[in-house]
Image (cartoon, rainbow, N blue to C red; front, side, top):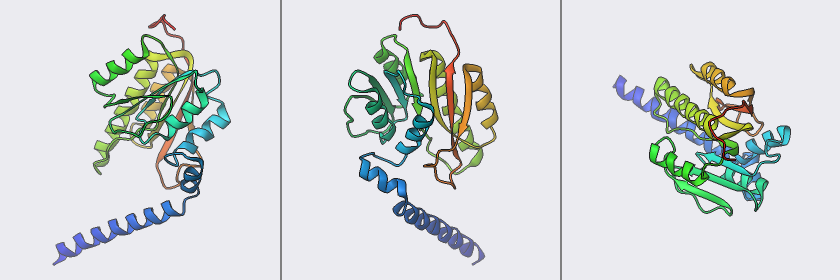
Length: 224
């Protein structure tokens, strides 16, 4: 009987959390604004806020969006670079088409998908790397933190190898045991790394963003 009571309490707590999330979502200013402005999710305003403050799209023509579904960051990017720019989005999930977005469906952590992305770049470096990606969570804290850190490391590695010197990168991360190590890694690649919590990011969320500015000079690529 006691075991059943514990299980029921867990179910009730989960149901209450879901109800609270739905209520907050329905009453969320950014959700309504996204619908009004034609963005696919409220996440667009996180990138727009960073852009407004730091002008990260200045002189940017080539952008890679890693983990782009449902597409709101790619929507922002395609509008910013215009018809003469190139935006490549990658995600495991399918997305509805976005004008001027070259979409690759697949897991960019897999070698074959990464090679497809690199082939699409045709040896050219990109001006900006953005990533609002988050892994599927297991609910096991240590496992989830490792997955999140692993994805962040891969995004930084991509930026290290395929971003122009002086280029920028925006990555979603979460507070956890490996956070300081990720910031340290980013600072080995970029001249400046800022930790940002956009207004559009929910207060209760542990997500934050690394704004990595001015990639340090490297010599891996010569074709630009």
